[in-house]
Amino acid sequence: MTLKIAVPNKGSLSESAMAMLKEAGYRQRIDSRDLIFIDPENAVEFYYLRPRDIAIYVGSGELDAGITGRDLLIDSGAKALEILALDFGRSTFRFAAPVEKNLSVDGLSGLRVATAYPGLLERFLQEKKIAAKIVALDGAVESSVRLGVADAIADVVSTGGTLRQAGLATFGDVLLQSEAILISRSDSSENKHLETLTHRLNGVVIARQYVLVDYDVKSKDLEKACALTPGIESPTISPLQKSEWSAVRAMVLKRDVNRIMDELWAIGARGILVTDIHACRL
Image (cartoon, rainbow, N blue to C red; front, side):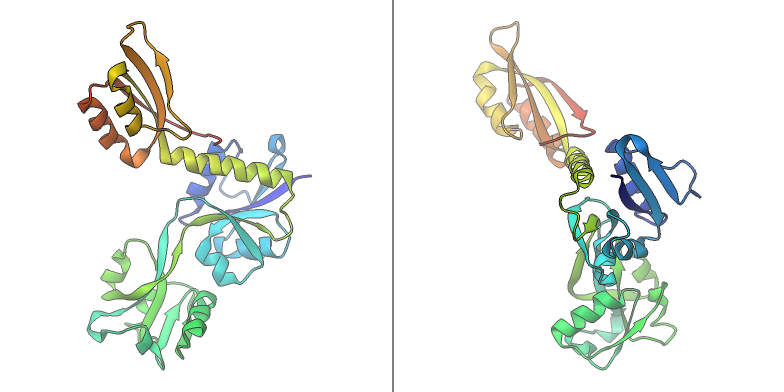
């Protein structure tokens, strides 16, 4: 049985998705014009589709799994399941309007709100019982207020630079925290190839968050050192030729590694080395 997987064909998620699949051991297309690529060694067929369409194909059962954004999944209303967050393509879905309007979320009733995510916005407005008019656009939502078709917008925000250029500022709480996710059909929970894909991608997600730290430390300082580097289960400790020294290896969160190296050095650890992890199973 072949696993059919949808991959974004363009946009901010495309390159990162293909890079992650390669790190997970799957071959990817070389020619960007290819719409289908078969990896027979892993019994996988990849279909390169518009990110906005992926949830529809997976939810309908035509494809087994796909990589898309959480915002796009929710907006589509498709019957697909989020099974793994992939830790890239992070963004927030927020309201924005000209600063001088000083709008609030409750004050949107009776106003026009432009968005490229009408399904997501409609769900939020219904939950909050806000009677705003949705202006559905395909893109360039930031221009809608200046062009007079909307009073405010609801859009995906990464850095906020585009909003500032358009003279807009966010207001209200974040509607949704989005990122790239792996989705599947609702009836594919017992698919062994999907289980393998999920384990592999999860291994890459974890590997990107951690590094391996190796160092030497005097045995009398070993307890302090291990408190700084407890690892996943526990650190690996090996005796050195010098009886009063030990070698330690442990996984450490990448974001903390420089601070931990400083603290290890301060208690007397030496020969501190850091190595990237490309994949793992924990």
